[in-house]
Amino acid sequence: MSEATAISEPQFLTVGEGDAERKIAFIIRQATSKDRGPTFVWLSGYRSDMSGTKAIELDRLAGELGLACIRLDYSGHGLSAGEFKDGTISRWLEEALAVLLHARPERVIIVGSSMGGWIALRLAQELAKLEGAPKLDGMVLIAPAPDFTSDLIEPHLRKKDRASLAERGYFEEKSDYSPEPNIYTRALLEDGRENRVLTGIINTGCPVHVLQGMKDPDVPYSHAMKLVEHLPADNVVLTFIRDGDHRLSRPQDIERILSAAKGLIR
Image (cartoon, rainbow, N blue to C red; front, side, top):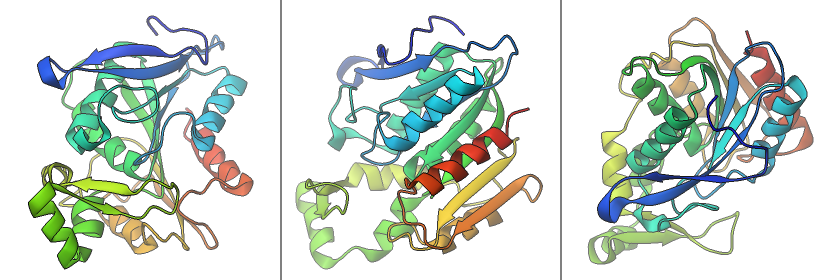
């Protein structure tokens, strides 16, 4: 892997040009094992960043196994530049792809949480188009939220939300995870329609393990079942956690996630 630095030392990569230029923060843990194992890649959820519990635990696992690990903050998140309100799936996908192509690991296991699961699926589609791109060895999707803008948000828009979108270009919604409200922009919703993946078979080209809490208030477990219907039948595992919430950050949840990631190492 090129230009890898010690863990906890963030690097910055410029993505985009002109008014769209932004500096994206990422951290690479170097592999220490002589075996050429895969690199873990962490993709956070909406309004989450690479310093969250699950991201840190994945990085720790990589250290224990002697593997490399890549984490990044999308623009408007964590240490990265850019305004959150400017974010779209296409924009955040572009950043994840840019960091991955910059780091140039040979093989990767992508671990995506919530919206990060959507970006992971889109990333698999984009990598398949590129010659010499990192090979996808596996994917762990935690409470994945593919197409959440069109499937989980737009059908439930209230009259005042639609009015706010028309007048201000966004609407706000109370967050259970932050004192600051969630902001959903018209650009995010429109771009989400262009990035839908639940429209046909999603050929990831690798084994996929989905972990879904059955008490998730944000992404219903029926959504995970819908996703599985769009994945090839072979090499797909769906684990329901009966008392699991959306975050799946309890010690027992972390253990399941790390076990799923280890199970994909070849």
